[in-house]
Length: 294
Image (cartoon, rainbow, N blue to C red):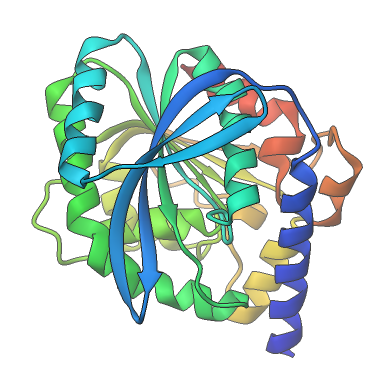
């Protein structure tokens, strides 16, 4: 039965990702990314930039992470833009899907005064469960490097906003930054964290990891959808409902957490209702909230 669930999740997500390709106009910006790749049984961390011209996106890999980081910090210290860090969903690193996401965020965030920084992570397996499980050793490898960058960004510009946008399994990848083992300080790293369709246990914020996430930000918004088919399937696989299905149901939690239901949102494109999982893209209300908070 779990194999059937895995297959259905993979098919629905890849179909929805492919259909994003046809949906909008573009702008012209450069967006940096860090890329956690899986190669020959181990992990490597690479960096680069996306050059976005109209509907075309070109990867420009960096010769070295240190030079890329230096250029990123120079830009961060010179311009007036705030920062949005994006953790994409399962298979979000696939070329077409990733480029389409980049164009979408370029239109909705870059043009609203944000510099977008992608944490691009690879899903090497075909199937949900294997990829979910491999995120733990992946982030054990990348955690210190990513947190070091985030801390440097915060320290160098304490008055500028650093927000985080996570979608689906990208929420798990982000949450694993706060697993034990890092020497980096994670408190007060971010201003606002947006957990969109989070593929996380519904009780995650009651755990030690969840408390560390809350301590890392001033505000948090959870977007959830009661008819999210992929998260219903994920709940069956894990044996516990997901945070992105019913939101936060604990009134004792921190008052800085905002619970926003997306179940009633109207999809701009018909295919989004196949999964009710990509509503950040198909429902204007989600990005309207994100950009208005800025």
